Image (tube, rainbow, N blue to C red; front, top):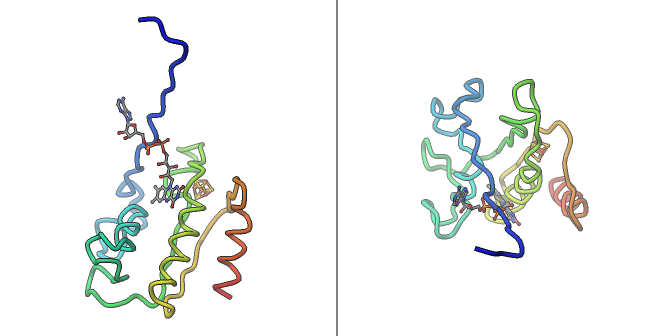
Length: 129
Ligand SMILES: Cc1cc2nc3c(=O)[nH]c(=O)nc-3n(C[C@H](O)[C@H](O)[C@H](O)COP(=O)(O)OP(=O)(O)OC[C@H]3O[C@@H](n4cnc5c(N)ncnc54)[C@H](O)[C@@H]3O)c2cc1C
Ligand code: SF4
């Protein structure tokens, strides 16, 4: 078959955060990965958009986002490039759903690499202050 070009866009594989045992995914009910939290924030998700702790279905007061799990360490040299921004987005949306929530993002450095991304990050920081 003759073609002009081929575009491969296989995306990413989700890192299995069970492998980072120190953070307790699978051991503690209230530790979830980003995709699971994305579903918790979604109106079509398991809690219909109510931000709840999986353990007791009550609203969390504080949410800690742990960045770079499974990347940028001695075993994983790469940066996935998307998680800084979606963590920022998830923190903003969590507070849109419940103003009492206090999100904290623990990061090495924030990779806000696209157009308008840094302004979005700064907005999140100001809203939290
Ligand atoms: C929790 C989370 C929240 C995010 N939130 C946002 C957001 O709000 N806004 C935003 O812009 N971005 C967001 N992102 C980033 C965004 O999801 C990705 O940047 C985007 O999905 C990448 O698209 P893609 O087509 O490159 O890859 P993917 O969406 O991963 O698609 C790749 C596809 O290729 C398929 N595939 C892989 N290998 C093969 C193969 N060998 N044969 C056939 N098919 C194959 C996969 O099954 C998949 O369907 C978020 C990411 C995450 C993880
Ligand atoms: S620096 Fe940000 S985008 Fe890169 S791996 Fe860490 S959390 Fe993800």
